Image (cartoon, rainbow, N blue to C red):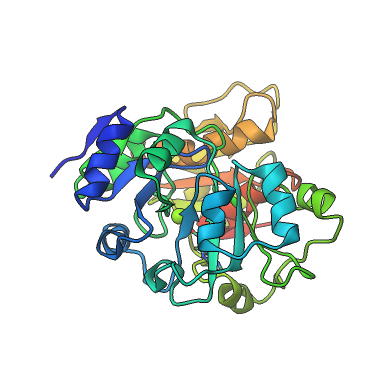
Length: 331
Ligand code: AMP
Ligand code: MG
């Protein structure tokens, strides 16, 4: 089978009703979706992605009414929903019994967000029920930020890809756990910063201890050390300007390698040099990141050397993805 790329929310709904997962655009990345109560189609989502069943899915809802069908939202959750939804903030909340265990990897909590993409919201409205949606790529690979990436990665298993153009944000949602409302905990960096959540909650947001990946994995199954990886080996460095690789990697660094800069300089770019953004703009860098990694994979470089971006706002999310995508780090 080869997927059809189209622009019809009605066709996406028709496919879902026939038990076929479809790919839909969101403002973050493209998602592979199935109806919340359709366990057979949800199982196909895991299978198509080759995603382990212990890696729970995010439930995508239209509004607060649908949120209340799937989770128990307290006062802190309601404050955040009022400010950031629809948008790229996923909340981990106690789940209601109606949510099938396959969605939450048997946990008593559920991840929920309301996406801001109008096509996705059209599908939710036409279907009249929430959808589950992980990113529409194979497990641990680069997330898709346009319809063609979905086609390249999973076109042979899907029937329909709804094309909404390139994703405006290009990086996955921020994940915040509110299981203990006294201790909100940031589980994944994303477009909504820790500081902006703290401003709304009037309370500090905790981070899982950075040194113990095991601990973070228990809180947030699926938050693997390796993730978002292009096929080409990726090396993360502090600054590329003046970078000297260790001796055993000199050849790798100098030959058939792509160098990706964040910081502008007056250099004239050679064919192997790329910028994540034209004007050191973090939002633009986030929107370009996965598309550039996909492009560099297709150029058949032997390695990609990329520099860290400033660690503020959405820059924290970019650095987090680069850290997980990297083969080796020189920071
Ligand atoms: P993805 O769909 O690939 O963006 O990943 C969704 C991520 O949300 C998972 O990998 C988990 O890290 C996280 N997640 C989903 N549900 C839960 C939950 N109930 N508790 C904690 N983390 C969750
Ligand atoms: Mg993903």
